[in-house]
Amino acid sequence: MSGSPVYHIYCDESRQTKDRFMVLGGIIMDIGEIPAFDSTMKKFREEQKMSAELKWSKVSGQKLNEYKRFVEYFFALNDTDNIHFHCLIIDNHQVNHKKFSKGDYELGFYKFYYQLLLHCFGKKYCTNENSVRLITHLDYRHTRYKLSTLKTILNSGINKKYKINYNPFVAVEPIDSKHSDLLQICDIILGAMGFQKNGYHLLSTSKKAKVELAQYIAEKAGLENLSDNTQLGTDRFTIWNFRLKK
Image 1 (cartoon, rainbow, N blue to C red):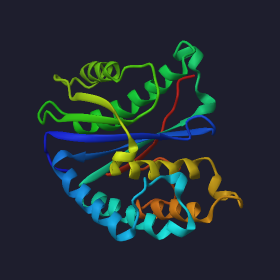
Image 2 (cartoon, rainbow, N blue to C red):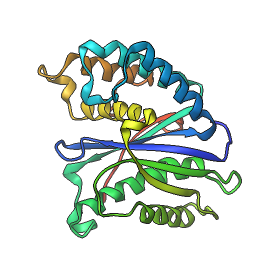
Image 3 (cartoon, one colour):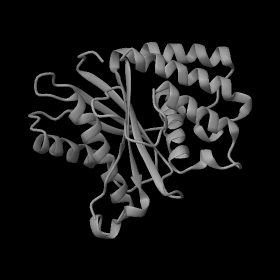
Image 4 (cartoon, rainbow, N blue to C red):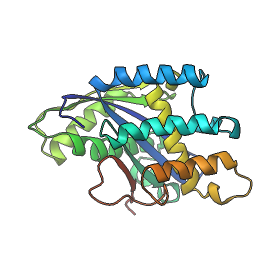
C-alpha cells in the first residue's frame, strides 16, 4: 500500500457465540482508493443483478459464481497491494471473562477488538515518520459501550506499547453493513474462516457452495486452509490464532 496518510479499516466478526472459534478481522484501504472500489462494485452489482447485501450466510449454489467473482475482485486488489486483510482467531473455550473482564462479556469482546486493531493495524501501519491516520468502522451492534472509549484506549496503548508519539486512531465508529461493500467482503472472508476453523467444511450436511467458496478463498490467498497462522512476514493477508493468558 502507498504511504498515503489516511486509511479506512472495516471490521467484522464471525461465530461470536455459538461455536468454539470466533474470528475478528478487518480490511484496510487507502482513502483515495475507495471511490474506485465503490464504482467497480456498483458496476459488478448491475452486471450480476446482485443488489442485495452480500453475506456469508447467504452463499448458495445459485449464486456461487457471483460470490466467486466478488472474491476475485478483492484478491485482484490484494495482490496489487491496494487492499489488505488481517484477522485474529479466538478459542472461546479459553476465554475467561470472569477473570479478565470482571465477568462482563461485552467488555471482553471489545478487548479482543483492541488486540486486533492495536497489533494487526496500529503496529503494522503507523510509525512516527509517516503519521498515518486510521478511521475505523465496526459493524453496527447493540452495545452500551462507547466506541469513543475504545478509540481513546487504542491511542493510549499504541503510544505506550509501540512508542508512537501521536494519536493515529482518529475515529472508531459503527457502520451498517448494508451500506458498505467493504464490510460485506470482510463478512464473507471471516465467514469462510469461521466455517473452516470450526470444521463445518468436513460435515456432509454443510452446503457444498460454502465448502467450495471457503476453499476458493484459501487458494486465492495462497493458503492450504483458512485455519492456520500465516507465515511471519506476510503483509497483505494475515491470520493470527490468538493465545489467551491462562
